[in-house]
Length: 133
Length: 133
DNA sequence: ATTTTATGTTAGAAAACCTAACATTCCCTT
DNA sequence: AAGGGAATGTTAGGTTTTCTAACATAAAAT
Image (cartoon, rainbow over all chains, first blue to last red):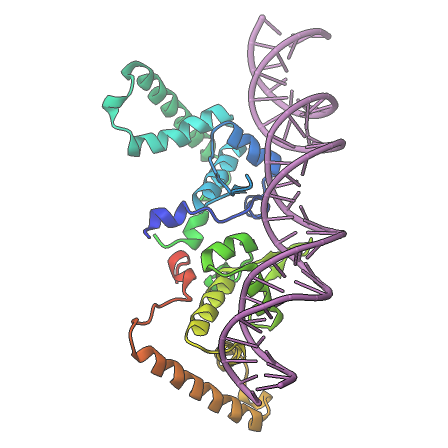
């Protein structure tokens, strides 16, 4: 079992995740509804979250605090995945460019926002505390 | 938050622990009833297990497979703790010696049993897979 | 032959979680 | 100022999971 498996292993109930992230159940479910996270389910349909999921939630929370909306966050987060996983040729070049631009703009906004005050909390990294890298 | 805190942080419901350890709920509760583990509880009295708890359960399972009974396992496990935490002077010297002897005997038995076949599975170390040491 | 140990099974209650619906607040835009 | 959308709160009713406690059983110890 490698690192990737460990981090994506479904382990936590929503109750614990609420405590770990300080998000409400409503928020967590809403983010799932909008495809920002995809926790596993038990045979009885209860959500089971992995380290990755919790990390993701912390990232979402972080971006929300900075004023981004879910659409933007979704772009950022799924953008990160795509860059690693999807070969360019697979995608529509035109809309891809637009996505890229958008992501760039968003990144700039974030960086800009980050300039003032609170020095980057380094959130969204629960697994750093628990999982060997 | 240091390592110790991380490993003793209550995180897992009994359902997940059952899967991680391949023990039944009955077994897990029985071991708790006999003071081999002491999981936390939610405000609603549901058990919440830490990495340490899961490690402990894996150790228990391991020792049981080797033919030890719970009394012996308890001595071994709490013995390990005492050696680290309790100053000698605090304890009754006489019964302490007996404990020590017992533990030695048990350890020998285990070592003996381990000699044949299956090369020490290195079980009881879940946190090794998840927690930085 | 009994008793003890470890585990299975069952029942009823409580806790946690689920979805769906409606309410509210805060922005944004017109 | 009014209307609309985004994000979250709240509530209701139902389902799943977990809880304790009791009784059952097989294997091991006495």
